[in-house]
Image 1 (cartoon, helix red, strand yellow):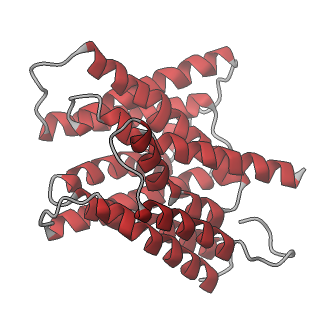
Image 2 (cartoon, rainbow, N blue to C red):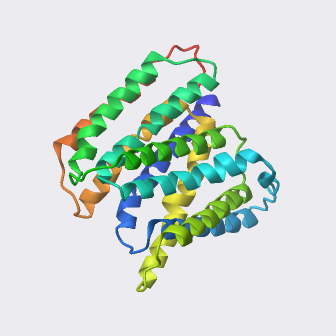
Length: 292
């Protein structure tokens, strides 16, 4: 039974990273500012959760807003991850910003180990170092050679910390109902809309495609992906899930190759081998050790 739960969690994790990896392709199809895109996407995700919740007869979760973690780690973590990353992208080389942001899986794995009482494990550090090192050539190969400001790096790190907060919130809760996700997504939509109004300018000319794809992002990479991520966090090894997140740039590159926006490269193979090696290292556990 435990193996079945773990396998289901692993499959949910794989689905999550695949959905996240589809974001660059979808984002390239629209001409909306980042936080406006996030607001539309999270609004669509909230509507999806509401619809599914009603069909399933789920009415639980209406008191989530009374928990301070819901506001700080849930909505704050989710909105912060999106805002700081998109803000950082405007302050330098996107490749370097992405690389710094992708330190978050290491932080998540280390914090999860500490909270589980295992302390700082050498194999977690080693496995993450292997995966991250494998990603460096791939991510930097997409760089533009732009000068990146210190603030850009700081915001990239802030985005990663926000991802850790959001993941710890999901991991620290029992399985959230669809209605609870509705409130989470709706809160992030309102926060993103507020940030859009403060810092962005709505383009004068938009198309139905812009709004439709933004909503599709909410159903997939910004909606269903967060739900499957929460499911995976409760049923699989946090260390292995942390390694799986390093597959996002790899799968994203494969999607770009399939649509003709990129070509197959040696850095892609290096990244793939590095992440597989990392998974092998971090999962060399004794049989007595429990699933994280």
